[in-house]
Structures are given as C-alpha cells and as structure tokens.
Amino acid sequence: MNVDINKAKEKFEKLLEEQLLRIEKMKEDKDFINYDELDKIIIGVVGGDGIGPSITNEAQRILEFLLEGEKVEFRVIDGCTIENRAAVGKAIPDDVLEEIKKCHVILKGPTTTPRAGDPWPNIESANVAMRKELDLFANVRPVKVAEQGIDWTFFRENTEGAYAVGSKGVHVTDELAIDFTVTTTEGSERIARAAFEYAKKAGKTRVTCVTKANVVKTTDGKFLEICKEVAKEYPEIEFDDWYIDIMTAKLIDPKRRTDFQVLVLPNLYGDILTDEAAEFQGGVGTAGSANIGKKYAMFEAIHGSAPRMVKEGRAKYADPCSMIRAAVMLLEHIGFTEKAKRLERALDICMHEEKKLVITGRDTGATSAQFADYVMETIKSL
Ligand code: IPM
Ligand code: MG
Image (cartoon, rainbow, N blue to C red; front, side, top):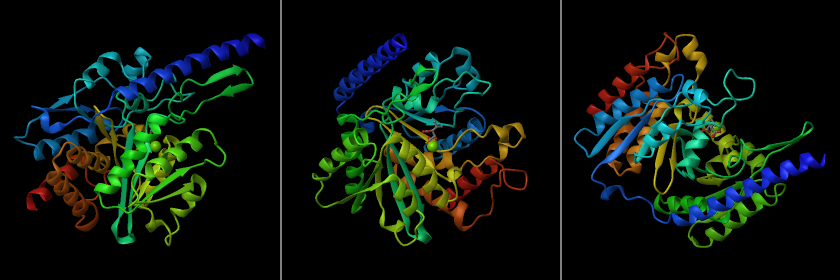
C-alpha cells in the first residue's frame, strides 16, 4: 500500500512543479499581439478529422474570397489526423505543432478525441493540447437568437480547471482513481479581465460568473473570488454569480435567460453550458468558437468530427456553418471588422431568413460546398 502512495505522491509532485512553472510562464506574457504591426498575417488551416477537412475547406474558401488582396497568407497544415496522432502517440505531432507555431491565427476543424475502449490509444485531445500549447486561455462562444432576445457571450476559461491535467490523473490503487482540477490567480484574473473588457467594449451591462463554489470550495472558490475582485475595477458593469446547476436550469427559463449577457466560467462548466446554450440557436453545428491567447488565436467549431457521417458517405453534406461562424470570429479578431459583419449578415440570411439552400446532413439537402457558394453569392449581393 505504501509503495502505491509513494508513486502517487511522486506523480502529484511532478504535476505541482509543472503547474508552478506554467504560472511563471503566464506572468511573462504581458501584451497581446498587435496584428496591425505585422507585414503579413499567417492563417494556418488545420482540417482535423472526419467531416473536419471538408467543412474547414469551405470556410477557408470564403475567407480567401473575402480577404483577396489583403496582407494575409493561408497555410494548409496537414497531419493533425487521428491516424497520425495515434501513430506517434501524441495529441499533436511535433512537426505539426512546429508549423502551427509559425502562424499567427489558426482555423481548425474538429479533431477526434479518443477515449478508453476506442480503436485509438487514449491520447490527450488535440483541442485541449492546442489550447494549452498556444496558451489560448479565453474560449469565447457567442450564442444569439434574436427573436427570443437571447444574446449571450460565454468566456470559458480554456487552460485550467478539470482540463489542466485532465489526462494526468492517477490510479493510486486498482480501487482508487484521482483526478485534479487547477485554478491559478493569474489564470482566473486574465479570463475575468477578458470578460469584463469585452463587456465594456461591447456596451454590455452585466457579467455573470458561474461556478460550484459552494461545494468545490478551493478551486471554484478562488475563481469566484478573483472574478469579484476584477469586477471592482468595472463599477459601471453589474456583476453577479450563480452556481452551475441552477444556471443550466435558468438557461431554459424564457423569463430569466434573456437577463444574461456575458458569462465567465471555469473550463468544464463552460464546456457543458455552451453546448446547452448552442442548442437554442440550432445546435452545436451552428456555433463557432474563438480560442484567444496573447500570442496566438485559434478558431473552431464547437462540435466533434462526426465519424459516423464519414462512414455513411455523408461527409460532403456536413453543415459548414459552425466553421463559417468561426471564420467570422477570426476576421473580427484580426481587425477586419467590416468583412466580419458582412459574412455574419450573409450567414444569417442564408441560415435563417432566405434559406434558398438547406443543409440536412444527407442528400436531401445541399452539400457543404453548395452552401458555401450560396454564402459567397449572398455576400456579393450585400
Ligand atoms: C469543445 C469540445 C472539446 C472540449 C473536446 C472535443 C475535447 O467538447 O470544444 O467544447 O471538451 O473542450
Ligand atoms: Mg464541448
């Protein structure tokens, strides 16, 4: 028994050292990259697995169309497939990561995340690894349903919480498994500040923190305390806090849900709540997500790689809207605000207003490519 405990202690000690080092690294990165100062913005395109490459390619085509003549370069980066990742036993193969790090922003398709029992080794998720490697601490996920008065922007903490060492838990004995959740001052402060800064710029009047600080007292407690501290710097913005359980309920309460504007929350709660939220808008296939760090940023869909669609030969009918939404966020982030607005407008027309083509996920509807063409035609008509 003692032997097992010593092994677990050693592993824990290593985790602590890694996390302390990470805190030091976070402190070093002070300023956000300024895209205006670059001669050229390099956009890396990582297709991923399953339906990923085809829907990412459609989003890329639209971006290329909108950014023609601008100081941008597109770089398609292959090799982030589950087959390659499994072969080298790494969440992201080294050569792929190296290429990614040469870009400024990444447009990323969904990647398959293995779990125990899958035909793949149970390696860490490529999403999670990329967020950590590039220190993309703010996962920004907007959800809008205008006719229902829903206009939420989630600021999901993206590098800590249950995900920080999610694949480094310890089987202490055959009967005892322990996972860890991590909250740091620096990590909480930067996500809280990102949420408040966004609220301020976007003219929002309220920021809501979501935790389970009544039960998960130490880590969620710290997250909440720091959000409260940061809130004091923004007296013009109302701040409140909710527990995750009641928040999941309130999101489906039509009388209350329209009160929420900007929500800031630890990683796992953000993961769960944003899937629920996206459902109001038409499901995860309609939602894009921005992963923002100080140096890099990555834009992706919030859904998975849908291997079943590929197996059934339906990949070309996959809904590209999530990746096109991600493209809207990318444009906005690198400073092409007007182009972002036009693309968003065109997408709203195609998806909700005019609906000349509809995506059904099978041959009863349009292909991803036809839909992307439709979006581009609509842009031209604006
Ligand atoms: C998301 C996804 C990922 C996550 C998975 C694929 C690892 O669900 O982006 O929300 O849990 O963050
Ligand atoms: Mg998720």
